Image 1 (cartoon, rainbow, N blue to C red):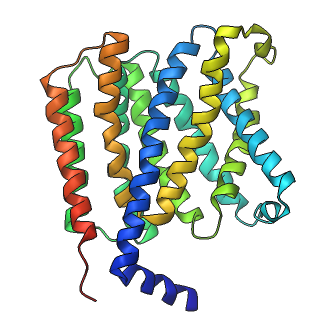
Image 2 (image 1 turned 90 degrees about the vertical axis):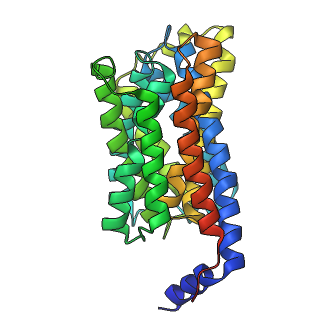
Image 3 (image 1 turned 60 degrees about the vertical axis):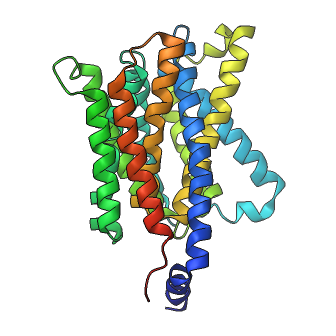
Amino acid sequence: MAASGMTAKRMADPATKQSDLTRVIFWMTGALLSFSTFAIVIRSLAANFSIFEILSVRNAAGVAVFGLLALARPKLRTELSVKKMPLHLARNLVHWGAQFSWSTALLYLPLATVFALEFTAPIWTALLAYFFLGERMTVHRLIATFLGFLGVLVIVRPGLQTFQPAALLVLAAALGFAITFVFTKKLTATETTFAILFWMNFIQLPLNLLGSDLTFPLRMVWSDAVPMLAIAITGIASHFCLTNAFRYGDAILVVPIDFLRIPLIAVVGYFFYNEGFDLAVLAGAALIIVGIVWNMLQERKPKNV
């Protein structure tokens, strides 16, 4: 009860609330850049390596980094409790399936289309967080989520050309990511960021190795070094940033900020992959950004207690 009282006091303090919102923006900026870079690098490596092999590199780097940190700092080892292992397992099995589906779709659809379809996830997240986490569904959060989804529709302009088999992969991944977001938010109540990320990589590495040719490192050449390093770094950074964002903000606040990945990746697709870029993308991005900015302005306002 004492902890609950402290949490209530923290949320009621306007200064603390504004500080937490600043932290959410900071960590989500890191997540935006990391996820976007991750998608680009997957495309560059897919000619020589399978999705399982690429994701294995990410997980192996995570296990190595977090394992070495645990060895060097005894305090971190005490954070690796198995009390929440069923929730860790559930989170990571769902996330593993969603990540594989999303990564595969990147090879068959324009980057902006993949990211846009992925952002049906906030709609699912908002509903799941409301029903299973007890988070408030305020009017301005609902409007921000709606504007974000409307922006996605403007960008994608749903039609027969959008609903290819690969598009169904992204939609399945979106639901998986939404479930993962809710599990992550629930874990942050008792688990540290270090523990969440350690178990994520530890659980998912053998799953990806099962689908890999275990001799794939022998196929690497010097030109693969930078992309593989980028996979390792962004694979860790993206989830580190996202998990910390969830620590300082409700899932219904954190996830809509991620909408900014759509205009960002649309620009990348246009300049580096010669993918179509038109006024619809600008219009959709404008709707998304208006919703996010308006929502944040509302979040900054002190609430009457």
